[in-house]
Length: 366
Image (cartoon, rainbow, N blue to C red; front, side):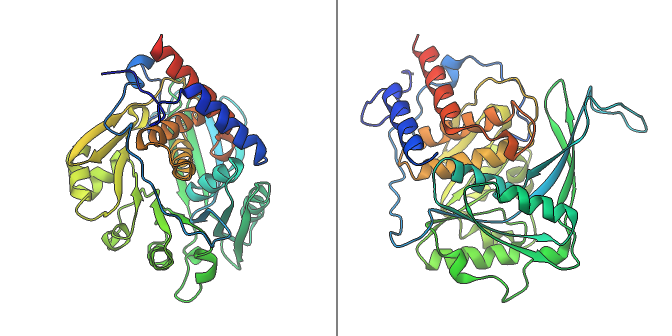
């Protein structure tokens, strides 16, 4: 296979990187992501998707590029020398840190940092956790529509990070009072953008939001990790679905994610792939499975890798890059997020992602 050329027009990656960085400045701005042993020259080989573009026709009369509707959370992150055995004690490596997270909130913050106009819609409880979450979100350069729900506790997680591998275990809870009841969701707020990004956790509200978005000519992407009864209705309205291999296998009732993707394709009408952790992404394209490998990093904390992957992919959709470049950009961003603690704290800058892509390409070319 030839070495990948990142631009369909034949431009060099260095020219693309410089242009992307200039745009960033002018604008003001996987569950298993361990060390990858493959060589860069293998990870950056061409695939059948390197000349294919989505060529999305976005609505032109919208205030925002992206509307994020879904979870925000507060994470207490604890690193341990090794994952504890059952019925044992272990001393943590450092003081437990309180950090902002949540799938959609993290992806929305990332897109806003990268220069997109973003609105985030969500809820918190009227507790200390909610006040911290809202305060942390207010630091991001995006429009917030965050409701404070009386007598509800906010979503929080205890995250145990295994130091040798960087892999994490998440123990979480969320008050059902944070779910939207019928009539509580604002249609105008949802349809003020071009892309709706959701997680499907509050499934009835997500279905309503996706339906409104489609009726308004928006595209819908999803970062979904839970199979719930009736999920098929939600998935039938998705334009870009890249769940984890775990979700794919659970949905299809199989241990083979390739077979699972084909089953999922019976429901999802749009672009379909699945994240493979350190293995990158598997794409179902023209009834064939195309692998877009990941890159090599030394993982510190894999907590926000998937959130950042989806944020980077959402950003890439607005650049009209080739499908392969969109996925490689998301792979690199997700991998770099593993090199530091926390979800939103782990978001790499746009310049970092571009620089790493340029370095991988250079190494593959030499």
